[in-house]
Image (cartoon, rainbow over all chains, first blue to last red; front, side):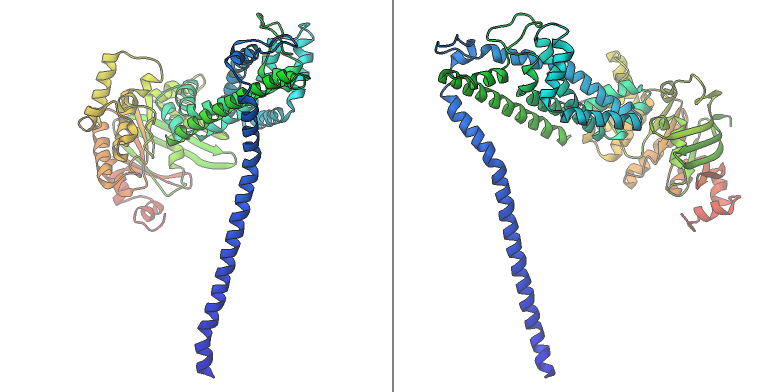
Length: 296
Length: 252
């Protein structure tokens, strides 16, 4: 009896061990498949959008698209040159305001601010970045468009800047916080004032990460349509003054896509393609900067 | 010996913690004073108070006086930046500026504060690196990145950077604790040479090191100065029982 149990025991143990190993392997396989499925579910819409825009856009895009402004209704051809330039002007002006404000705000939060006021500012920035962009557009409409008695590029750029500020602020702050305190101390201990230390050591060390944040902010506002509806308004022609309505690529896509003409639809698709490719390029550049930055 | 730096009833609070309690010490000029004590006894806190590094720490409060010659560095209207130019600091972990070359690291104190003449810079770089005995090792690659140096070389570079701005006092916060024995030996020899020109205050965990390099030793325990005196006496016939227990390894 005794000999039998002692002989059987290891066999039984081995069997249960094999069973649990099998179970664990099965669980592992199922989970891997599930996660692979989730990955596909994420990639599928992206691929769908990209492929569809490629298909519709590539056939409509031509050199004319980049060189001409829209033709009058009924005439074939034309392009969105004014929209692309307008978008660049709007983004450029928005950056002039949004990037410095965001960066200086981040410097204040990470290098100078007391903990209580910083918490308040951080909270406000998070709320600001969560506000639907159409509301930003409405606020700027009542703040700038109404008093200035007209839609303008300035108002559009201001609305975009409001969207950029919290993005630049929070990403820059995160990057500044990643700079080791020992570097700041090294500089301070040499008798370098705090403001010089901040600019020449801290911000300098965080530069690649900050650049990434700026590019992501630009990519974000490049596609914004809603805040421009009440501010930049859009323009069928070239605009010569910043106080006039200005065309923007997303606005043109919007108005062309809802128009009843096939020709305009094609232009809208071409515009969508340009916009998506630009944002893709911006994101890739941002990734590239981010990667080289973390090596140091 | 006349004192260069004098702590007069120094207290440091962090929030509700009383980290340094009513400390009085004279640090004699042109000598090495070692601050020893177990972890958390406030020795680094004392050191950092001497060049106002706590200004940066939210919630830190320093009271009492610290006299550099006859000026209270915490006095009204005293600029901490001016104080730090006279009181340099070498940190525990070598911290050269990673984006700068060896050359630029040495003159970082000048460069970060504006521009300087090229010939003047060359001269300062050479003499500072000579003084920390790093010149022969790096003279052919002054333009390469400072992070390519070994830990010990980086620490000597940091000391070169500190003396390049011609301070009067050098604070060292466990400068050799992250280094191998040979690098440690080099740093200790360097300290011995530097004291001819500078007043040196060094925090160390290593009691043999304190015994080797210092002229005066101060023993801290739980934020209080227990005993301060000539190193030889502290290590052979200390007055206080706690000091004796610590240096003989009975606690800490």
